[in-house]
Length: 118
Image 1 (cartoon, helix red, strand yellow):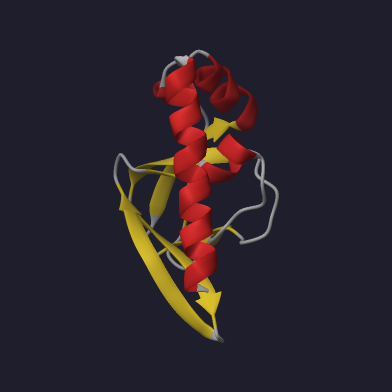
Image 2: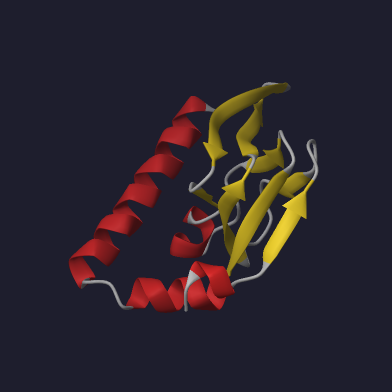
C-alpha cells in the first residue's frame, strides 16, 4: 500500500496531535506543514525537534509498544498521512531481522537518553 492511499488528517496551528503517555495507534508522515515534538521537564516546555514535509513522528511507540514518549503539536497548519498501527507493524515485520533488531535498539537508546535528560 502506498502512502497516497492512506488517510490524511489536517491539523490547524496549535492543535495537539500526540500526547505524551498515551497509547499509540498510528504513526504520522508530514505531508505539509510543521510539527513540534516536545516534552515538559521541570515545569517548562522543552522542544526536542521539529518535523517538516516528508518527516515521520509517532513511530517509536509502535516499534516498542510503549506509551508515547513526547507530545506532538502542529505549529503551522499541517496535513499528516496517518499510518495505522497494523500497517506499520506489517511493514516492520517484512524487514530483515538485523534491521528490526537495530530499530528496537535505537528506540531503546533514545528512550534511555530521554530518561537521563529528564
